[in-house]
Image (cartoon, rainbow, N blue to C red; front, side):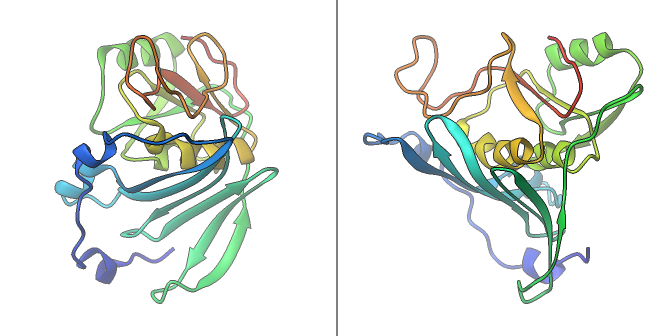
Length: 215
C-alpha cells in the first residue's frame, strides 16, 4: 500500500469536543456514528495513524463500518460476514480488495495497545498474559490490526466513546472477532442515561480474535 503524503498536507480541522457533547435526539433502532478525526493526538503530533470512522449501528450492534487512514492509505470495511482490506490509489479509486479474518492466537500473543492512552491497568493486563509481543498504534487501527490477523488482542482500560470504537469494532466482528466488556458481554452501542457515565461512553473492554482472554 502506497502512502498518501499529498493528502496529509491538506488542511484538516479537528472536531471540537464540545460538538460531541451536544444533546442528541432519540436515535431509533438504527443510527450512524461518525468520527471524522480519530487519533487527535497522533494528528497533532504529525504521526500518520489517525483515521476517519463511519459506522452503522443497528439494535445496539455495530453492523457496518469503514476505517480509513488518509496518510498511509490503509482502508478497512466490514459488514455481516465480510471484512476487507481495501487498496486505493492517489485519486481515491479502489484498485484492490482482500478479504481479512482474525487468526487463532498462539503464544506469544501480539497485543496492540494505545500509543497515547496507556494506563497502569493496561500494563497489568499485558503482564498477566505472559509472553507477548506489544505493538503500539493510535486510533481505531488497533481493531483493524486484530481483524486482519496482524495482532491478537486489543485491551482498552481507558476512556473511549462509541464514535471512537464503532467502525473498527464492526470491522473486527465482520472478520470473526469480538469486543467484550470486562464481564464478558459484547460491547453495546447507543448507551443513554447511564448511571455512572455520560451518554455514549464505553466501559473498559477487550477486543480479540480467536483467543481466550480474561481481565
